Length: 192
View (cartoon, rainbow, N blue to C red):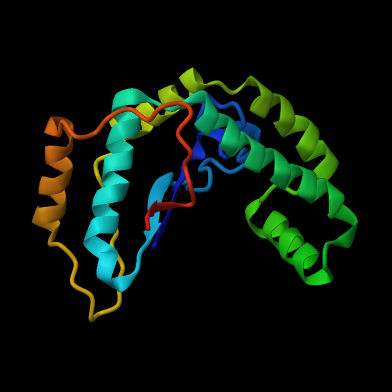
């Protein structure tokens, strides 16, 4: 089974025209590095198939965008995380609180109260639509060369750099990549 996910900075990280840029603003001249990317966790036997499946999903999103159902599913997860953060605000462990305070003091990591964070992010989530997410996704693709980091145990064969780049280069010409219907169920796995 392959688990996968797109850690895409548009909704949480401020890649959408500074929508949530306040989260990363500090008095330092250089903001902390945020790198949106795609990660895949594959079984040893499915490494190549997992890479292919992930790249096909990126190409599908590039060609056809995202459905409203996909967006709403992700936003529901983000809202649930925010609600949990507020509900557990009084139960933060001393160690976690100390880590946050050290990060705030040393590198300027914001440390807003959870209720304030909820109030600030909820309107941003409410304003999200597929056009905004697709625009940020297109900008991410346009501004980035393909960077693939494949990490596997030493006994697992991986394709060469040339093979990976050839796979990426062939994606736009593939005619087997079709749009996802808005009512398609999307599970937790690209492959089973």
